Image (cartoon, rainbow, N blue to C red):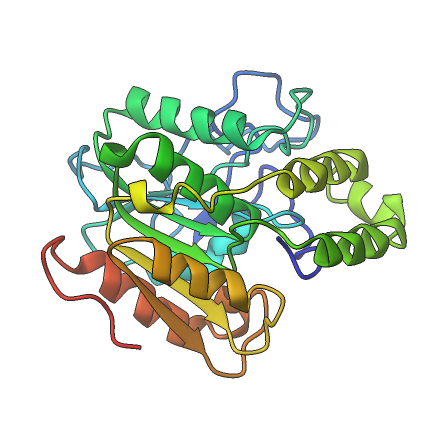
Length: 278
């Protein structure tokens, strides 16, 4: 779950080395004002190119980045900018949170949507990287379809969100003007509904079914999610926990250099190789 709303997501824009399509993996209409040169479903790669390239599908070198609540696909810009040669990546909007979309959010629905489109892409086993709510979705996919996940990275994830944390987040959300979200194309009502769905999540009994090598990352200052990080590392058979000093909830933005080195080293390892050092 998020510590705070992320940076303003701008649907359908190109930002530095990252090209994002507002209708990513969604066949509904694009929001008004989408630039004509942005292609829905473009694969992300350094240099800002949406060219699908020639990397073979069915490989752990196909990476799907899943944003948190209050974030957007652009939350992963620093990571995609640092992506090594030989990888390809996607950063979709979570189903139910896409600007202009009408579908309701649910964790199983968001997980099924990502899994479906991986199958349509011909990816038989790819890597998943999720932050906060996106990490919960990634974990759900790894539980529902273990064979479809070659490597799993869970950042600021939760196993069963504590009621006290949820109440604090609902209070914080209620104090943020809806116009702040509207400028970014995000519905405050959608965020509230997603927060409610996340509050009903409990993966405690399913962690043992995750078969992929897993990297659990937590910021040293993210105290609300630290207990869950320890549970994940203890409950997932091939999981390792890494704490990034000085970082809070948005680890990948607060410490991009350290996080990127950790992330891409982990994803580049052979499945049978050693896990990352803590």
